[in-house]
Amino acid sequence: MITVEEAHRIVLSNCSVASIVLENINDVQGYNLAEDIYADRNFPPFDRVTMDGIAIRFEDYSKGIRTFKINGIAAAGSEQISIHKSGECVEAMTGAMLPENSDTVIRYEDLEIEGNKVTIIAERVTHGQNIHREGEDRKKGDLILRKGKRIEAPELGVLATVGKNMVKIYQRPKIAIISSGDELVNVDTKPEPHQIRKSNNYSIQGALTQFNCEIDQFHLLDDPDEITNKIRGILNEYDVLILSGGVSKGKFDYIPEALMQLDVKKLFHRVKQRPGKPFWFGKSKEGKTVFALPGNPVSSFMCTHKYVLSWMRWHLGLTEPTIYAELASDINFKPNLTYYAQVKLTYSKTSKILAHPIEGNGSGDLANLTDADAFMELPMGKEIYKAGEVYEVIRFR
Ligand SMILES: Nc1nc2c(c(=O)[nH]1)N[C@H]1C(S)=C(S)[C@@H](COP(=O)(O)OP(=O)(O)OC[C@H]3O[C@@H](n4cnc5c(N)ncnc54)[C@H](O)[C@@H]3O)O[C@H]1N2
Ligand code: MOO
Ligand SMILES: [Mg+2]
View 1 (cartoon, rainbow, N blue to C red):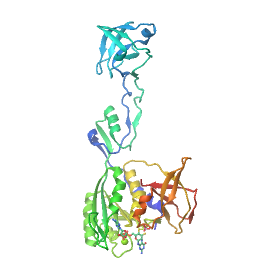
View 2 (cartoon, rainbow, N blue to C red; view 1 turned 90 degrees about the vertical axis):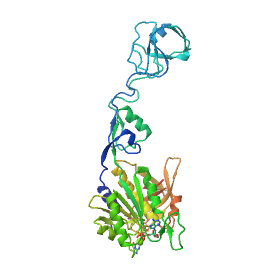
View 3 (cartoon, rainbow, N blue to C red; view 1 turned 180 degrees about the vertical axis):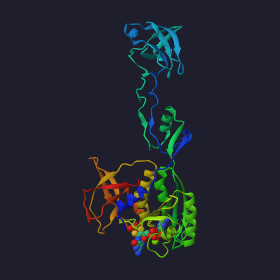
View 4 (cartoon, helix red, strand yellow; view 1 turned 90 degrees about the horizontal axis):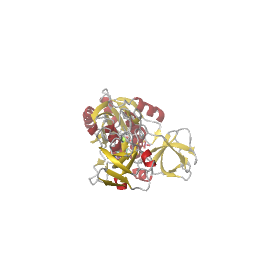
């Protein structure tokens, strides 16, 4: 049996970063950027007029000139035009390049126009008003989107602005979530007294939706041939297999044997942790990744968060901040295992994150998870974890 640290290291050292593909900007929303994006021009690329009106030299205004002769019109998309002499102005539209030799824009609402004469009626005009200065937001060459960032609507706008019609993204893996056990029936089925409805599939899938991957669900009955044949087919089609159940010491726990028959190399089986001790991890010859999680709902849920999500983030070039919390009350845990205590998190006025233990009835008690927010990772080698001590937490909401 290996330690949690060892298990986590093996999982990540057997995680290749996703292949990088170049996709059209119309097809990348929800993916993670696989390249740093830099400003190809200043943001904005020129002094941009922000209100429809006229552009003048503030010097004329400060000398008391209030009526100007209009000598042209600067439209958004037209090349830059100039003001040539004092007392002249140019009509300037929002989005236009600020006319040369001008430095102040007054909107139409503050003007009276007669023929080609315009008089300023505004109470106050300030130098440089109604202009979005070149490079005010970002400078040419600035890093504006970092590799690993998830592409949502705002990022699409910036990618378009810098001309990225083809974008490098991390290809997301195809995932198979596979439950196993004769006792399990579908959510829409009325169980017999000896049966239960499948739940792990939903909670595992729920933990993975953040990555927007293609996920399919499968179920295996406790039949060695069925298990081997079905997993063989799934291994051909999917990049990541997440099984739950059938990995402990039971007579019908066929999964490790089946995986061995399918040449999936066992990288470890059993970890010094609770819940999740019987966790099995391996890789097929073709490089497919197999997480065979313990069947108990809290075990599979914890292993999903501690190991599978870490693998996914690494694979997709994502980083996740480590969160620590302070224990609000003592926890006693005798076995020499790393203990993942379920906790509810609150935030003290001194901006501390407090972790309140939510005991529950062991790793079969999936309902207890609905009262908790995270697992607090309590390291091996202690039996009492005192209030006030700080430990890492793995949030699941
Ligand atoms: N003699 C020993 N027995 C057990 C040990 C051990 O070390 N020695 N380990 C215990 C621990 S720890 C765990 S965790 C479980 C894990 O067992 P399996 O991975 O073989 O899981 P199953 O036996 O298939 O099922 C366990 C339990 O979970 C329920 N289950 C399974 N799949 C689902 C699902 N998709 N949705 C909801 N519930 C599910 C199943 O009905 C069982 O009640 O082994 C202990 N035993
Ligand atoms: O591994 Mo366990 O402790 O029942 O989840
Ligand atoms: Mg079992």
